[in-house]
Amino acid sequence: MHKSIVLGLRSEMHKADAHRKLAEIISKETDSRPDGRVTLAWFVENRWLPQMCARWKSSTEETNRGIIKNHLTNPLGSIPLELFDKFKLQTHINSMADRGLSYSVVQHVTSFMRDIFAEAEDDRFITRNPATRVKIPRMVGTHIMDAENGLSSGKPYLSLEQLRKLLE
Image 1: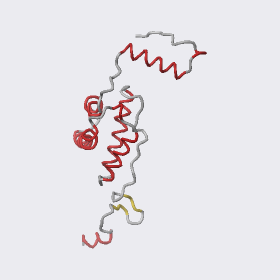
Image 2: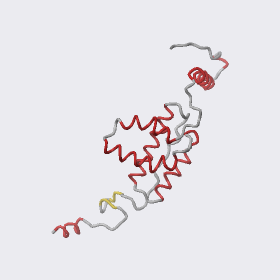
Image 3: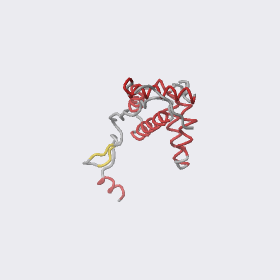
Image 4: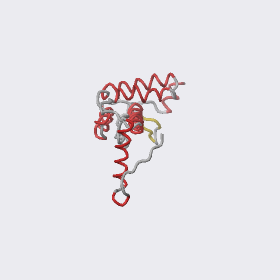
């Protein structure tokens, strides 16, 4: 339903104040704003996953659910969405890298975090996405492309010559 409302005189109000006042009015009228107790686990399970699972193959869904459960909802799921900030998320990602998890897992978790919090922001569960600027830390001993030798894992590996000899 369309409804007009006067927020005040333009000459007496800044644009940001008008936006804030309008948000308050909409919140009161619709009463759809969460009470701030929505946890990460609840949001992921009830809002984000139902949307995402429709886009994934069943094998991808199983893998992604495992990554999300083990690295997001189990360690952080009980925390309300509004209490997350960039520091908390970045330290979580850093600790995953420090524990020696693969670059792929750390990258997936970072991507999932950005997407989950973007969806929470779009749905107005939070006012700002704290995961926007979370970075994947430099990781030692993970798969890195080496211009001289090809793929390196930080562990001993066979050179192409050694592999050829082994196959012979």
